[in-house]
Image (cartoon, rainbow, N blue to C red; front, top):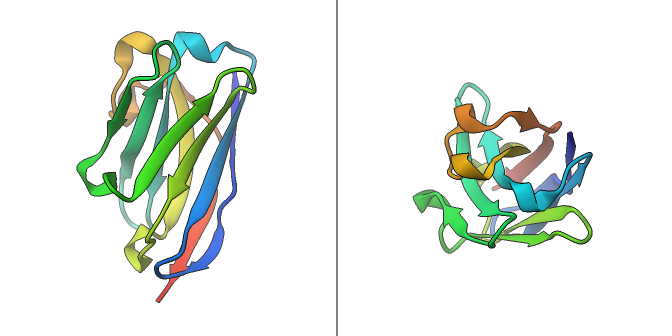
Length: 123
């Protein structure tokens, strides 16, 4: 099982980014894919997750209205669309996989993690 996040970068406040998570070695239909972020000096927090089985979505309250998670099972890709970015959204963003039964945004429930991608929002 491998995951790789990409698409981060430097963006001005109010801008948008599309992060991509490339999955390999497993079928998305059997897993929940979550996006998490970790800012300097802070713990890892969940942003959004999606069930590969039925497309169920769950967003952290802080991400509602600002983020959209989308999956393409055929391409084994999961995207996180970020809008209206603020400097406090600056963090390393990770995608991770958990068995469907652990669907949610608890990082401890996720077994597989990809390398993160840095998102930096300038004011």
